[in-house]
Length: 193
Length: 330
Image (cartoon, rainbow over all chains, first blue to last red; front, side, top):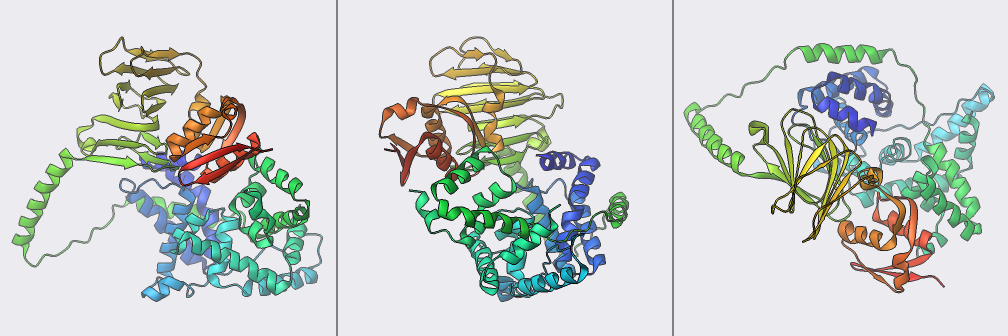
């Protein structure tokens, strides 16, 4: 609801609307960008380009159904072009596997010893490594950014059914690799305050 | 009928189920009632559901940096760039004369088209859409509805929308009047927020804020002036009625993708299923239609709505093409 209001302010030419959107989405966009690259300058440049473009084209940009998904999608496009992962050939666009995406789960906790934490992190990193880049990205967009399968499908340029399968296979994979999800649950319990 | 799916649910099925994820992350009364009931009905699945909840939480918390000093820096860079006008790259034409002629032709054709055509927005069954009008007023179009306006609006400044179905308008105050034509009714406003519904023989206007004037175009009776919280209803061949103290929250609940029921009869919900989703509903027992429901039902997806209805009413809902059969459970 707040997104929609900020968006309509911005559309009516209020810079405060754009600033509100910027403040709301700077962190999520940076966070998403870091999964593609560790080079922060690319991420900052892409965010700058995105908001500049939003402002300049505010009269022609159609109000999206979900502002968050629209911003993530546009940001992804700009960043990948900068990183030169943008698909030049159709087959690449289809699989999309050439775009790296790294997902790390949070593992820090004041009550846990550093070496135990390092050990856990190693295990979880190994767990995440068994997934493909696309599976990781779909998992991130689904659980962290709370997008629907339809919205993710648009970002990854595949159909909705394919997106569901991507997430499902990733979950299946995680379970197969580790027998069950207990390690993930342990992580969650550890970081609960 | 719907429980059958869940009997075979494995961990992955719960984890990938959007309704389940929604319950875990953003629980509300409806999702809570549904999943609690499910785990009561299927005690053998309850531990699995508990574990699935925790996994959803775990997957939802990747590393996130807090407070980033670059945030202010990048915004300043955006602001600086906004001050400078963008550099346009000019296209070079090899045959300037031909280019000029074709541009002229295009412009003429374009102008004719621009001033005679309309922009039309349609929604299908079960779909809602929000659009921003040329004057930055917003319009949320309910399912199975059509709104149209003149393409030349940005130039002429004539604020007029015609509507079939239902829409919620939030009108920018510009000093010029804004008109909505819906069947026999014409609503005239300055800046305000209101809901208009025109389905078959009934036209209804509910005012949330501001002030509107409603006229019947076939010249029946006096214009009505509505105050916030008032509604106006016109059924074919009967004099229009102004109703005081309308529940505006309930009248506009559809814009928030929910159905707000305040002792609402099931047969009125059936009308929603017909108007917005295109279903014909058959009641195996006509007393079902007279039952009343209170509460909030999510309408994000029609599946949710049918789910919750079957739960609350304790009925089975069977679907055959566009027909829904409501049967009381034994």
